[in-house]
Image (cartoon, rainbow, N blue to C red):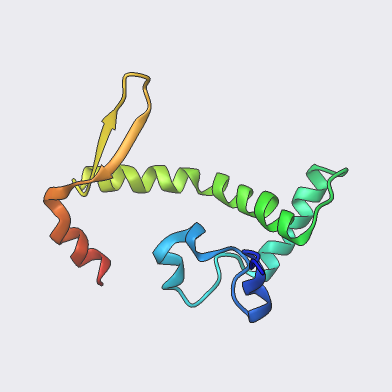
Length: 117
């Protein structure tokens, strides 16, 4: 039987799969959302979309996760800018104006040191 991505919740683990938030989230002792914050996000979504209804899985995946990602856009942009300024990440612009980011191979040891702190 295939396991649902959200089966971990019954085992006391976070409802959102760890791969969504990456290594940094698995290293912290607190979940990415606090319970009161989740309550406010659910109420806010229902207030803004008064005809909405969904399952637990749908609420986690489509309401909470999507809103979380949108809220993080500015923080991610700032973090990328800082990593580019520090030469840890290389920014390249495509002809269609998309910007792509990749690791700076020349800084691998420095990046490894940062990640192991």
